[in-house]
Structures are given as structure tokens and as C-alpha cells.
Image (cartoon, rainbow, N blue to C red; front, top):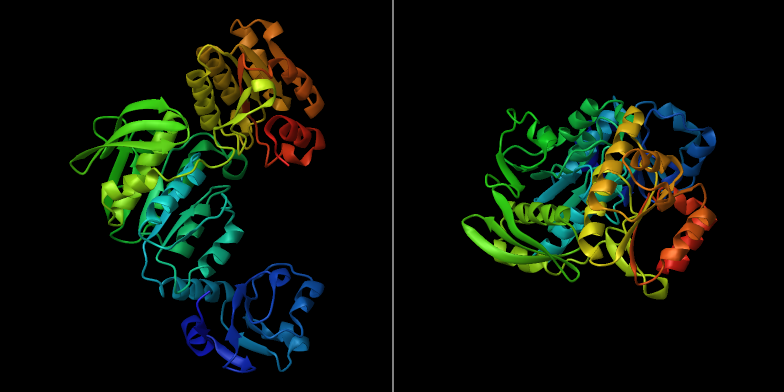
Length: 466
């Protein structure tokens, strides 16, 4: 965090010091009492915090920003500075604006139903050839991380890249308000997060918050091949729109896409140039991620040859279509980071492309956050299973609908295992753990199944995870 003078901060928030020293130091900022530490600038938000939580502030050098400072009278001591403001929420956003505008650096925001983490890491790798880059860590894009990420800006930060997830309407707007990106990417839009967004239309509108969130005169990068992205109303956008895809009309276009050992090769056509490039990680969708990342780097001034050289250094994100060695000479495609419908379709296509003469085994699990669209999306996955010619299907829990549907579509029921536990999955997998099969793991391990010991044991025994 960059050092701040309290006197300047108070002025920017329209506040008044009613207790304590105007020379108090700011080393940390929070609106959660439990994350409080020395020299914290604490915003007293209207949350139902208990007195015990507020008591964690006592005795530590601190600065409290509140519209009701009398709530803290028992905490007042020589270590405490209290700032009275008219509205603590407004004061918080005034502070955020002040802190962010102290950094004249390029910032890129990335949203989409899938591919956010991979694309963010690609951009970070590309920009690292020229900049000291700050950004989202390990896919952690929860809104509660926005303030800590913002405070991660310091004198050494030269560029930043942030994932912007959507669990409910307002998420992307909140992230944009914190980071003020000059470049925003919408990778794709598929069915997901329908518990928080209620309907697919609400979810699409939530993704579209990126359009208004980009700084005036910035660049909006859109997937030209995604029908839901194409449907977005961009008439109000005051900046440059850049498209990417494989179609002839895309500004950043990939052709000659092919699988190579460890990843994909393709030719990029953009800005009057044609460049042969490679990217680590499998699947056509990974090429989309790559050309979106290249478009973002180009938007902030990198030339394409430099950006392409940076892309070649990208290392595949773990548990994202990661091909790993399993027991007895088997190979397993680990795509267990998350489990959205678009990513399931993509992983099945990769299974088909990499199998060669081997038999294809798909281990498929629950797809979260689908609401009333669940059965329809499982049925679409079943259709994809049939199209790619999966030889044996193992389904876990709610994904049993996929098994039911492929049976209706003509798959031999003897080639389907229905599992309710990690033990059952391990038993079903055992006959296929050899060099005659390629196995796809596609289920939400980190966010759901990692809580169960049998699944942890499965991942340890077959993939070597601790």
C-alpha cells in the first residue's frame, strides 16, 4: 500500500477529525473489524457487527471513519483517531476513488462465464515482459478481495489485471468502481450463476456492466463469435471496440488452429499482421483466451511480436484442462477448477481431440448455480457426450441426469456408472486406469468435493495431489 497523509484523506472524504491526531499513520484499510490491525483506516459500514467485533479495535493505533462516532466512545484513547463523515459508505467510495487515481497505470478487467483465470494469467505473463504487474491471485475474484487488491497498488506497480466474476448483479460494477479499468474484456457468456442472478437475462446484464465500467476513451474487447456477447447493447460506450474470434470480421482473428504437444498453435491476424503463435494449454477455447489477451496487451501499447513472445512463456493454470500422468500408464485431463456448462462442452471436445486410438472415459459431476436451467443444460451435455463418442461415462450426484439422457439417446447402459460417493467413483475408475484409456475429470473439486475425504483420496491416488 502506498503511504498516505491522513490530512489529505480526510479532505477527500469530506470528513472532520473529532478525536485524536491528524498525524495518525495509515498502513491498512478495512471495513471488517475482524481484519483489523495496527494503523488501520476503518470504515464503519452499516453492518450488524457485534460489540465483541468492535472491541477488536480497542488498544490498537487506528483511524475510525463513521457517521455515528458516538458508537465508539468507549474505544477512544490516545491510539485512536476518529473521523466524522455524513455517510460512511460514500466516504469509503471517496477514499477508493482517491487511492485509485493516485496511480496513472494501465488496468485491464476480465469477465466471462469461463476463461477468466486463464486469460488473466496470460495477460499478466505477456505484460511482465515490459511492466511490473499486479492483479488477481489464483482466481480469487470475490468482491471482498477488491479492496485488498486495490491496496496492493504501490510505487512499484506499473500495470494491473483483474478478474471480475459475477455471483449476482452489481459485481462487475463494484469491481470496475474499485479498479477503473481502461480496458475491459467480455470473453463469453453462458448459463451460470442463476441463483444469484435469478434469470439468464439478469446474468447477461450483470456481465454487461463491464461496458459502463470502463474509463471514458477506453477499449472494450468482445468475443465476436459468442451470440450472447454479440447481443449486448454497446451504443452507449464511448471508446474503441475491438473484437476477437475465428470469423473473418474479427479484429483479432485466429486461423490454422491445431493441437501440438502441450498446447495449441495458431496464426494471429491483427493490425495488418499475420503471426504464427503458440499457447500452452489445450482447446480451441484456449486460443480464444489467448487472442483476447493479445488484444488487451495491444490496446495498452504493446506490439504484437512482443506480446506473442510473452504469450509463449505462459504456463498452463493448474486444474484447467491439465493433462497429467495417472496410475499404470494412464493419462488424465484434470479440468476440476470449476464446472460451468461452456467449460464442460470445451473439455469434452479436448478429450475427443487428444484421445487418438485410446478409449475415452468421462467423469462428470455437478454443475452449480444453474437454477431452473439445470436439466436443460445437463441434457445439452449429454448430447455433447454422444457427439464426441465417449466410450464410458461416470456421473456423480446431480449429474446422473446426463447418464439418464445419454441412455435415451442410445448409449449402452452398461457403459455408464452412477456414483454418489468418492468410494464409488474410485471403484468405477479402476478398470480404466491404464494406457488404453484417456480419462477426463470434470467436476467442481475445489468448490465442493474437496470437502469430502474420499474425493481428496481419489485426487491424491490418481493425480498425486496432497
